[in-house]
Image: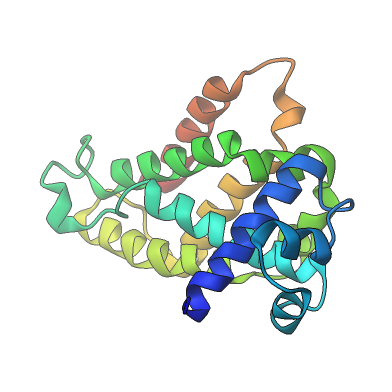
Length: 201
């Protein structure tokens, strides 16, 4: 018998396929259940509607992006001068750029940003979601370690981590505003310069 986690991942995988193919508005929990090969009550017991299901799906996908971008830097993983390529600041900026690049290429994220950006409004303007919390749990200690190695400027690590995260998120979700002047690689390069300047002592 499949574990609860396996069933949930199976449903989330099916939801991702539906949303990528049809968009959120045209996806129903019945569609997801059918694609996942489970009964409708199995889906409805876990998620009351498609919006809740997509929110959990986005959280899962963003967590995967964070992990795929590589380990958040630590002093032990640095080993170079405070201002060099191995500094915590340099590693943080590379990590943030990797996350941005992955988000810009992710089929689910791009589908939602391109066709249904209002779904992200709550998490862009009103409150932090669980994926934000996961990112902050990784970023805040790394910022503090960058301050310890001298590569990150003074300031409340929580504030710096929040601004780092929000800057990456807003750059990705606003990428169409740059379309006439920058491709995705150029946008990530400019984001890298922006974040490095913000964190530099």
